[in-house]
Amino acid sequence: MERLLSLIKMRNTQAGFTLVESLVVIFIISLLVVISVPLSANHIEKLRERKIFQLLDQDLLYLQNACMSNLGGYQLSIYTNYYEITHISQEVLRRDLPAGYRISVFNGMNSISFTDSGSIKKSGSMAIYTKNNVYTMYLPPGKGRARYEKR
Image (cartoon, rainbow, N blue to C red; front, side):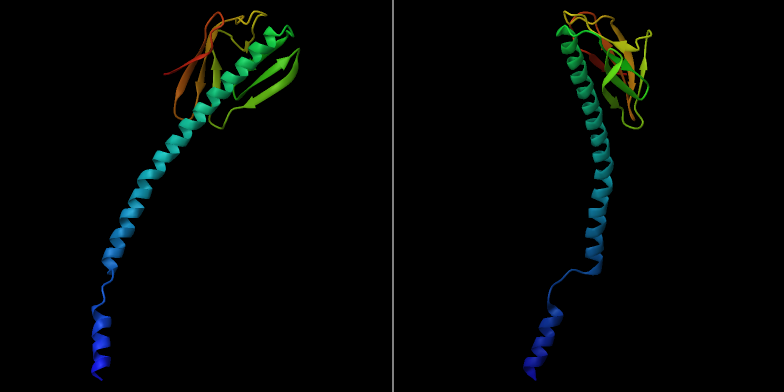
């Protein structure tokens, strides 16, 4: 009988977490999740912007190389929600912009092409609107690459 009473006393004295302690831990974890989710969503959007600009740079380099290889007739046509590379009116490549992105051209610069030496034929600039930011893309005269500035 004494052994049974000692087992019952041991069972009642075992340490554990109370309901209040468990709720506090759950609250702290949920608070950390609530704080970190918007930060990661903003980071994902920045990565998407970077990817779009890198892709556009690669496409401009492709266009420049195609024009320098004496094939001629290549140009990059710019539209509001997409751009495309064409060769003598035939579509070679089309890139759709993500939802919420758009391009607005300045000075009637609706297309980009290069000379046989790799210089841009008509320099200019355009605005690229992303979900959170607006960038101006400059295409300087000569063989320079495109440059982006955040407004």
